[in-house]
Image (cartoon, rainbow, N blue to C red; front, side):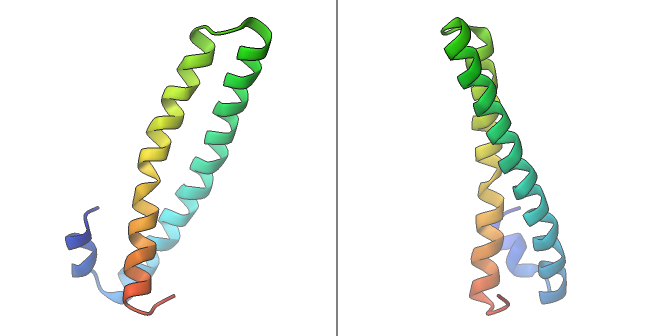
Amino acid sequence: MTEQELKALTNETLIEKSKKVKTYALINAGLIGVFIGVALFSALQKGMGFFTVFPLFFVFLLAKKGQEYRIFEKELKHRNLK
């Protein structure tokens, strides 16, 4: 969701969507931790290989998705809702 779309939302809708985004952010953080753990375990046990690099690809994707949470937080602070 872009910043322009966020500015068009009402305060109530923004608060509701930010709660959902916060839940997704926590799930993403847990998944990132699991993927990094798998990559580290694989690297320590077998060295560099497919199962070392493959989870790190998903970490990158989940980290990119995390930008949405920061945008919501910025808009909430801008509107003095948080």
